[in-house]
Amino acid sequence: MFDIATFISRAIVQSIPLLYGCTGETISEKSGSLNLGIPGVMYVGGISGVIGSFLYEQSTDGELNTFLAIIIPLLACLLGSLLMGLLFSFLTITLRANQNVVGLAMTTFGVGFGNFFGGSLIKLTGSDVPSLALSRTSHCFAKQLPFADDLGWFGKIFFSYGFLAYAGIAVAIITSYILKRTRIGLHIRAIGENPATADAAGININKYKYISVCAGCMIAGLGGLYYVMDYASGVWSNDAFGDRGWLAIALVIFTIWRPNIAIFASMLFGGLYILYLFVPTGGNMAVKELYKMLPYIVTIIVLIITGMRNKRENQPPESLGLPYFREER
Image 1 (tube, helix red, strand yellow):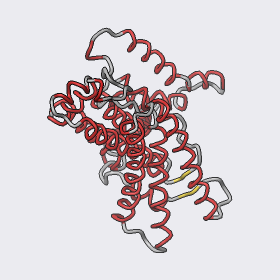
Image 2 (tube, one colour):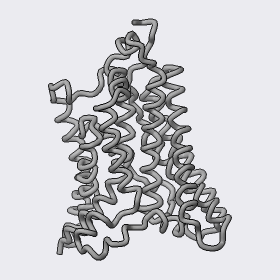
Image 3 (tube, helix red, strand yellow):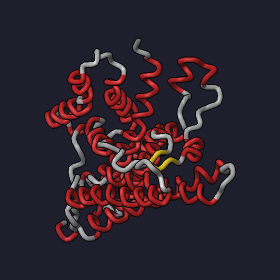
Image 4 (cartoon, one colour):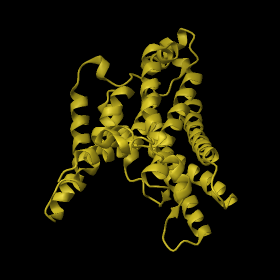
C-alpha cells in the first residue's frame, strides 16, 4: 500500500538540504554572483559541524548538554561555510576571477576537504566500517515536537521534524521578504541587475556582494549540517551527499529566483528523489532506475522551459556571473 503520510513526511525530510542550498544560492545570484561552489560549501558545512560535534562528544562521557550539543556544531558549520564564502568573494569580487571556474574549484575543494577530515576522524575512532556515528548529537538535532505522535497523520506530516527543518522554511520566507520588501533587498537586486547604476547611486557594490555571498554560503552550509545530523542520523560517510548541491542550484532557476516558491519546489524534488522507494516495481530493477531518473529529467525540462521564457521578471539578474569594473562606467 502507498502510505501517503509517510511519503510526504519523507519527501519533506529529503527536501530540507535542497531548500537551504537553493535559498543560499538565490541570495548570491540576486547580487550578481554565480556561486557554483554550493555543493562544496554544503560539504564543508556538514564536515565542520561533524568536527565540532566529534570534539564535544569526545570531551564528555556522560549525557550531553542539549544546548552545547546543538550550538557547537551549529557554530562550527556556520564558521566553515563563512570561510568558504569569504574565499569565493575574495577571488571573484576583489580579484575579479572567473566565477564559473572559482565555483567549480570550490566544489572540488569542499568535497576533498570533507573527505579528508571525515576519513581522518573515522580512523581516529578505529571504526570497522567507513563511517562515523554521532548518534548522541543527532538525537538532539532530530527531536520532534512532543505532541506529534498524538495527532496521527497530521502530526506526522507537519510536526515530526527536527528544528532545522522548520528553521529552513523560516529562513526561506524571511529571505524572500528581505529581497522583495526591504531597502537592503532593493540594493542587492539593483547590484545584480546593473551594478554601474547602483554604484552611481552611492551603493557600496563590494560590501553588498560580500554580504550576499557570505550569507548565502552560511545558509547553504546549514543544509549540509541538516543532512548529517538529521537526515543521516548523525552518520558521516565520505561522498554521501550525492548530487543534492547541484539540484539545489537547478532549483534556483526552477523557482525563478524566489525563495518562498523554493519551499514547495524543494518538496516536489524531494518527493521525486524518493518516489522509487514507494512505487511498486515488482522487482523490476530497470523500472526502478527509471524512477530514480525523474528528478534529473524534470530538471532538464525546467531548464529548457526557463530558457524559453520571455518575461523579464522570469529571467536571471542581468549582471549574473559578470565581474564589475568600476573603471568601465
